[in-house]
Image 1 (cartoon, rainbow, N blue to C red):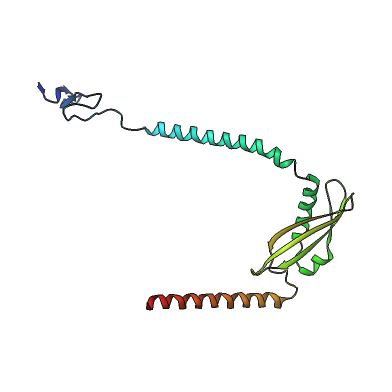
Image 2: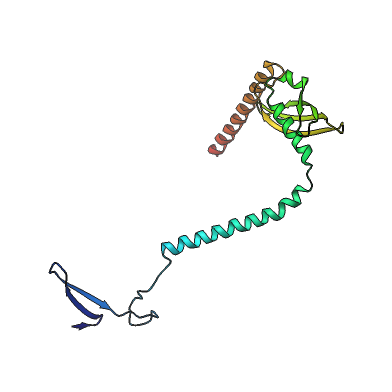
Length: 192
């Protein structure tokens, strides 16, 4: 039996049920008498995953190549001994818990066997508990000094406890004024 769509086929399943199906003719180029193309319309899940994995592998490889090309150019300008001394000095200064002990300094032995005297100079910033810390290491074989500046959060590093309270009060007042000013501008805009 035939109709406009193609052949109709019949078969009996193992349970004895008659199954009727229709075989359709497929127009490969998609042009014809209103028939739809039943070919592939997109990528399968496996193809998409493989493409993503290939892209990730290529991105990592390119990143490694760029790092390996730029790292030697950057490292040639660094003094590794000075960096090692400053790293150990930073660890020693950050281990100090009170502001008064910063002025006393501490001694640090470096990996090369030299002893350095390390001092930390902390200045409070406008942000509560944030300090600008300058670390200075004196000594070593050449007798010079090494310096590094960094920012650290240390609530206990104020010269006296009133400094922190004053700074907290100043910041609170400043923010309250800003809020009142913003609220007054909003109310003026809503009235217009």
